[in-house]
Every structure is written in structure tokens, then in C-alpha cells.
Length: 75
Image (cartoon, rainbow, N blue to C red; front, side, top):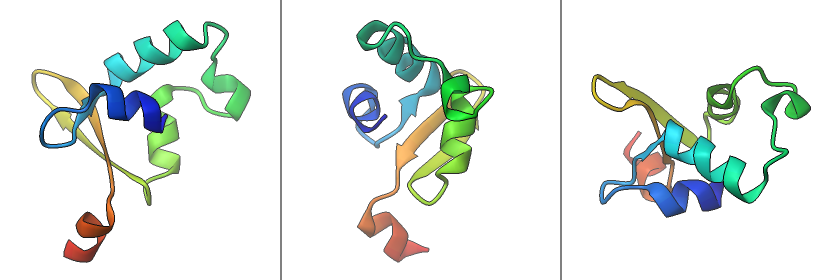
């Protein structure tokens, strides 16, 4: 997941969930969230909310961002 996020993040650190999903399918065609006990890819980011922040935008849908030490210090 981290590699997918790193490849598709924008300058502010946000990556579109759809881009992450496409990347995962490309590098691991048999990837299925149900193998991890999850219904959807977005459930992964909900499960690991201590590592990833999510937001929904009008144009891009769900986006994710890695929570860095600097981000955690701001909270």
C-alpha cells in the first residue's frame, strides 16, 4: 500500500483511491481485499486510520494520505 500511495501522491501528499487500486491490480493481479477480511479497498485505510488519513473530494472521490510524524505532531 505504501508503495502505491508513494507512486500516486500529489505534491500535498494525497493519492486517489482509484489510482492506488489500479496500481495494486497491475502489480498483483490476484489482489483481493476479501483475502484480508475487507469488503473494499477503502476499508483498509479505515482500518489503519492511525497510518493513513482519508478525505472525500467532489472531483476525485476518496483520497488517502500517509500520516507522517510531522502530521501527527500537529494534532
